[in-house]
Amino acid sequence: QVPLVEFGGGLAQAGGSLRLTCTASERAFSTYAMGWFRQGPGKEREFIAAIRASGSAWYADSEFVKGRFTISRDSAKNTVYLQMNNLNLEDTALYSCAADPVPGLVGLSRPSYWGRGTQVTVSS
Image (cartoon, rainbow, N blue to C red):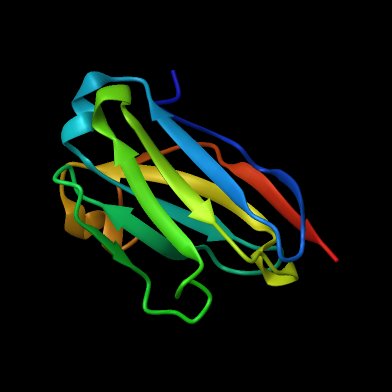
């Protein structure tokens, strides 16, 4: 059983918005840090953002994130979200959710649990 399942991807217009959702299969994940990553075509996977069980979040120190992406979670629903606004063509990627009991491992792109990802394609 895949521990994390993402959905909400799809085709979006440049300048538009999408909200990705990741749902964990086990209640234990409500105590884990969870994060979002993405991998564009021909690119390496990159960290976007993560959020602790407490709700405190941190983001990649990258221009593509600033002011456009917001991570949040609903622990009661065992779910984490990624709100993406003002999308551009470079946001086209496979977006994956990840989780780990140790927040630092999420931030270091070494979490123990991964989802299979949801594809986001941005068109002009």
